[in-house]
Amino acid sequence: QKALPRLGLYDAIFYDTFGEGVAEFDAFCAVLPALLRPGGRFSFFNGFCAHSARLHTSFAMRTSACLGVLGLRCRFQLVPCEPPGEEGWRGVSGRYWTFDSYMLPVATLDEPSECRADTPPDAEPGGRAEAARRPNGADNARVAA
Image (cartoon, rainbow, N blue to C red):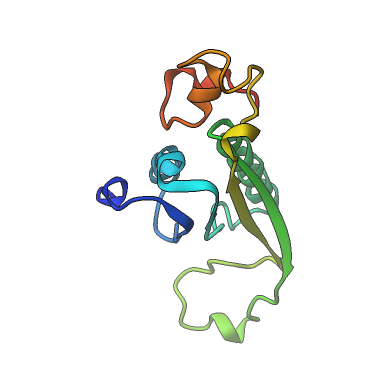
């Protein structure tokens, strides 16, 4: 992950979050605008809070809002799945998925002209629209999600 910024821009990135915590996930997401080409896509293994449907959905909403601040529009496609029955979990130390559907995240980096700021991109250099495209920018909190 430390080498990613030196590798250029990507059309798409998939991040396997299995075994990662929320802090690592947030740190990776913070650099996404610098890694993706405009219009580039991002997805990840959405296994956070897999023990509770309510918390899992809440984390998905949180993720969508956080990515929105960074200039990524995130949607979740509901994919039906059939978790293994009792026999399928035999010998597995932890059940990592028990829901009957999976919320597949797909985020797209806004084109520069689509940044959801309240000022046009060329209105003020270094302003809100530019901050929406800049990872970890101090002004990112002021960008409308």
